[in-house]
Image (tube, rainbow, N blue to C red; front, side, top):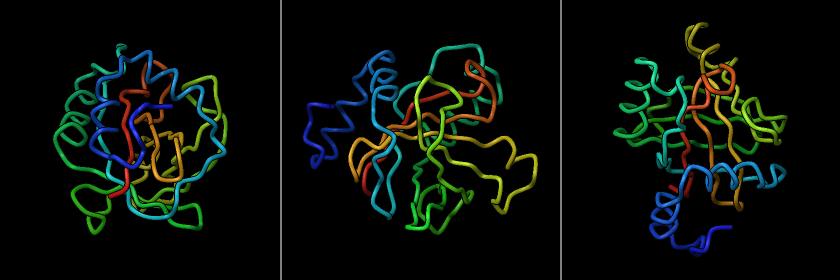
Length: 164
């Protein structure tokens, strides 16, 4: 568990940004997926690119830099196991998802997966989107963002969720 108090959001974000990739990998892989976040909006913070060839495909590199490193983003979780991914503010919803605890597509662990198959988006976009999170407490989570592709292609960056 991180050493920064989970109630000190800025200290927690700074601590997570200082972690090496292997530390984020260990935290994601060894955290209990049965924890649940409280319903509500969470601010996303881009932490680190996952180094592999898929991360550097031009579309992945540019879209993830623009949408996650530069643009403020967040997630709103609803009590019914659904939610929205948004940019700038929850009113700018980018895609609806359903949250499911299942085997991670990218790591040897269980995770909470964000599936966009029922989102009001074009079919090819719904099929492309996929993310995973692991709650660290009922108010914080670590996640892997990317695309619905195998390990080394789809798992592109780590992010942190803190209360918005």
